[in-house]
Amino acid sequence: WWERNHALADVVLRQGDEVWIASPEDLEAHRITHPDELIRPLFQVRRVKLIGGKKNRAHYAHYIAWLSDPRFDRLESLDLAGMDDLQDLGFLGHVAGLKELNLSRCNLDDAKLGLLPKISSLRRLSLNGNDLGAPTAFHLANTFPELEELHLSCPRIGTDAALHLAKLQSLKRLTLSGGNLTDPGLRRLTALRNLEELDIRDTKVTPAGVAEFQKALPNCKVVWQQLPAKD
Image (cartoon, rainbow, N blue to C red; front, side, top):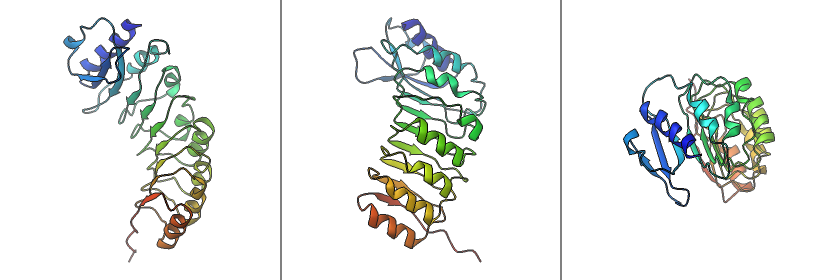
């Protein structure tokens, strides 16, 4: 198993991206910056983060999918933001123990996102900056009911999407900024009784809609600003 982890860490570092590793018994992982630091014989890759400009990283999927044994592998956080050549997200279903996934600005549409398989351990998902709408919200509600944090700042996310998102009863944080949300959609979200923070900046909700929402969920922090009136 350690060879799989070593291979992923090595290929990611040689591309100039970031890796955090830890021994199986360690709670905290530490970042390494160069392949020469991969001298420990037994370690787990705990976190991978893409940085820098546009590069060919299509081969990452092969190495990531290797970390599939829950007895030994523990890739908890995977940040692929900006990797816009992703075609099939099916490889993510093999990753053991994945808790956080960032697919922001990955050139995803509803069809591509619909191929994201169930990841039972996933708790935090970021999809900002993709061309996603109500079909994606439907897929998320039916595939990831355990999500606690969802970032979905996409222009087409509106009232129809809110109808499905309201089924994600474990959500504590939800970001819908920059979308097409209106007061009726916001009203749907009052069903999220565990919600602690909602970001609806730059949407079409009104002060009256926000007041109604805050009355229904007084313990939820609402991050909001009214759009300027059009001339």
